[in-house]
Length: 165
Image (cartoon, rainbow, N blue to C red; front, side, top):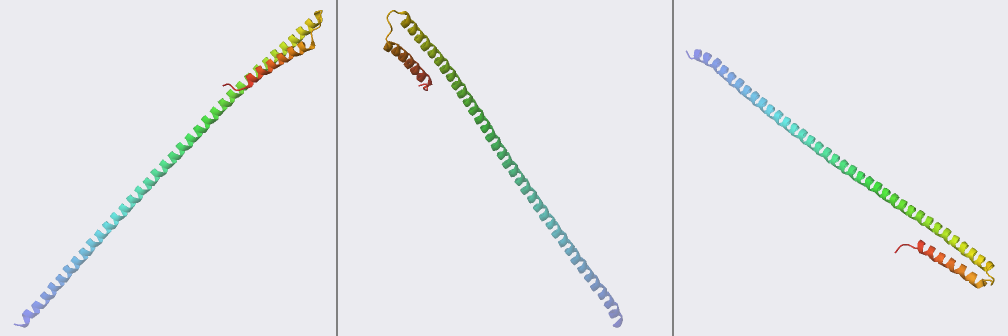
């Protein structure tokens, strides 16, 4: 009577213990799997955040480089335009100066030619008068006339060559 219950109870007890152990193992495995999944999700999230940060940093660097290149190009263009404008202004000023100098030289040459012509005419008139007159013209008068003419010509040339006030 005692042996029969013991024989029945022992296997039942072993089955129950086995079932409990299996349940504990399943629970532990599930917990481990959940933990691994959570860790994988966290790692994936961290990797995604790092990739996003790297992409943002790269975009910012590209924008900074583009801005710097644009500023450099604008500065170079402004410098080139300034140099071209300066060269054009210098060429215009030099051209105007050359034209003014040429005009002054032409005027001076014309005045010199006119003065030389006047001197020659005066000398010719004086010589004709002195030869046609019964009384010879004194040499001092002839010299004085020539000197006065040359002096007035020199003063005129100096006035023309001096810079304007």
